[in-house]
Amino acid sequence: MTDSSGLELRAHVRRGDFELDVHCSAAAGATVALLGPNGAGKSTLFALVAGIDTHDGPATDVEVFELDIRVDGRVLDDHAAGYRRPAEDRSIGLVFQDHLLFDHLDVIDNVAFGPRSNGIGRAASRAIAHEWLARLEIHDLAHRRPSRLSGGQAQRVAIARALAADPDVLLLDEPLAALDTQSRIELRRILRRHLDTFDGPRLLVTHDPTDAFVLADEIVVLEDGRISQRGTPDDIRRHPTTSYVAALGGTNLLRGSAHEGAVHLDTSDLVLTIADTSIGGDVMLTIHPRAISLHPERPVGSQRNVWQASVELVEPLGDTVRVSLAEPLPISADVTPGAIDALGVTPGSPIWVAVKATEIGVLAT
Image (tube, rainbow, N blue to C red; front, side, top):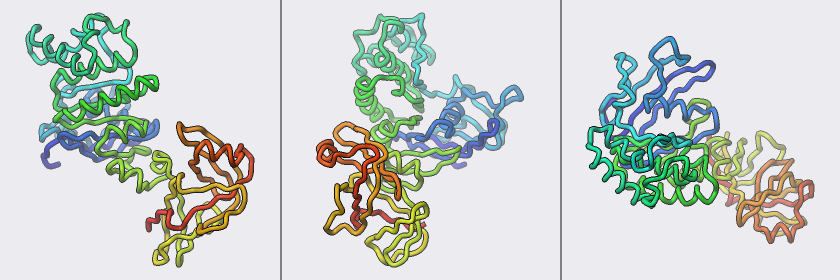
């Protein structure tokens, strides 16, 4: 592996029946989100980078085939050379879902812990801590113990503690997962602002696509221990390559075979018309839920794809309503609450579905 600015890692390990095989990087000044379902390998990768997952002896159940982790060329792990830098010497700031604050210290001394560990004197460490508490808008909590903090307050303290240590890398493991909705929205705003001021690489582990789309510059999607897709948030939203990735952005993903503008779907007898008649062979189609219109009767108009379906689920999502449709093609449509009332849509009711050919994204596979 060549030296580079930022975080660079290769990991090929096995734990029981699960195998993780990943190569990814995070540039200095960039936030990379490791996004994936539970069991995809995100937490294992996080622990390996942090150095808190012991993998160097028979007492563990982790078998290492390859592990090479570097920050700005500085080696943290080189399995081939038999080298592993201790966790306390990695200069990594850690933020966990459950805060892990020191119960016996008040907030100011929790945040001052990092600078003190770096050899900075008590007074100077507390001055740094006061500065970070002010930045995170919690200076009034300086002398509280963790037991007297709300979940959102405790997580702000955990973030301040990580940043006050002036680490080379910032790792965040589901930092907003344990918070209520309002606290999550507020802390996401604050976290975004402070991530942008951190010069080192930032690695965010999350299963929440909103956190990834809002906080990350690049998203790396993990599925079953492998990277299934990577790209900017817009890339991930607009060009999903797996059903899981499509579901993250609410996009319907279909596969089939195209010939002269007609796509025969793999999982349905329905044939969809696409705008580009030059594409042939195996294709992947993407249809955004907002591109699908619902009608009480067969529509007459410019739509090239029209069929009748039954409603499986009606789910309010803020200012829209997600309608999941059943056979002949299980897909989802997003409509307004007013449209739901006008259509009289309920689970089990029949509905006509229409999609314009120009609204269907096509990617040859």
